[in-house]
Image 1 (tube, helix red, strand yellow):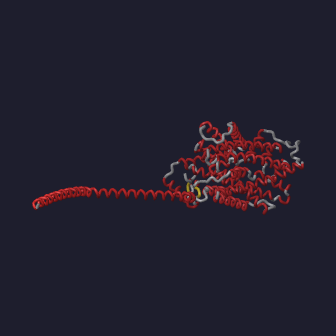
Image 2: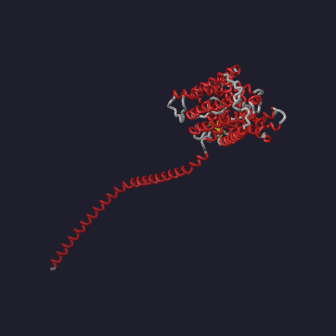
Image 3: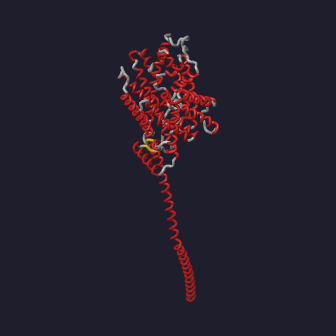
Length: 552
């Protein structure tokens, strides 16, 4: 038993040792494997950490960039209204409404002539009946011309009127000559004459028994020009309101005259309008009829003034034709009825001899308040000067924009958006005519020029119909109307040379003096020093008038 027990103990011991040995071997093998894999993981771990860090940074950067972009977009959205409010585009703004356009046309046509001396038609027609027919025919004829300009203004939607249309069709030279004569003679002289009439009627109550002296009349005329220039520089809306107000005042004055005329007709006290005498003394000669038409059409001058401010009209394609269609019949009816009212009280012979028809009419009907008529005449002249200044400045502004006048005249005020340099230039030229002793003789030299430019513009409209049919034309009038009107313009030019050949030839010679200035000022390639002087002068005007070129 002792031996058997010893054998069993040894067998157990051997089995125990072998089992422990196997377990140790397996443990070492696991440790080796673990060490091997640990070494490999230690080799790849830094790069994995770096890549993970970089991807994390990129994601964070993307998030921050997205946040910044969103914040910038929010800031732009909130700042856009402030920017648009604080910094507007530098240009002449569209402020002229339909009613402003109607006031512009009526105020430009009706000046002092209908109050003072509507005698040109009566003198040539010879009778009351013939005079009224001539006035009606002139009104219809002027309306047809205005309709042609409605098509021109909606086809060529630039400011500048005749100048722009001639430039578009005939080129730079003819446009420059038009601008040359308008700048030197027609615009400043007519503005000064009307302002002088305003001054004369304003001062007449202080000189009841004698003529108004020249010096105070010229001073008041210059003050009138200065005041209206200031108003036009400050605001377009202020200028149009002045125009509307004074247009209403002159219509009111003419309405008073017409009402008293109808009162005379209702009473039957119309000795000069009786059927047996209304056409007595009529002149039926061709020369008399032509000259009567010439005088009547001259009284309707100004129907094309709204085309000088086309760019400043609100919705010009609609409002320009409508303003013409509304205003021209009003002017025609008012002119005919006013002359009818005159003939109820004043004979054709007295009307030819008098220098103030409306004043005589007022003294007869208004009695102690007849002083209202001179006041209304002055107000009418004041409104006419305002309309002429407004459109003349736009004409010179358009010329400077095209390079035909110094670039300083094409500047726009940064706050008021008005052509301040051009307005001041217009006022200065008008005041220079205060030095003239016989300004009317200067104006008579260019009696044909207006019809020449109008005829060229409307003939250009017919040419555009043929050469450029693809142009957009919101309105298109019957082709026979512009053709007939061009023939009539040619006829009026011939009549001008027939009535005053020497004066018209002098006027034509003065027009041709613009050719050297065109070559020197526009065609000539100026030296560097000349360009530098012009640049310095333009910069000086920008600083003085707080104006800059318009934004393209």
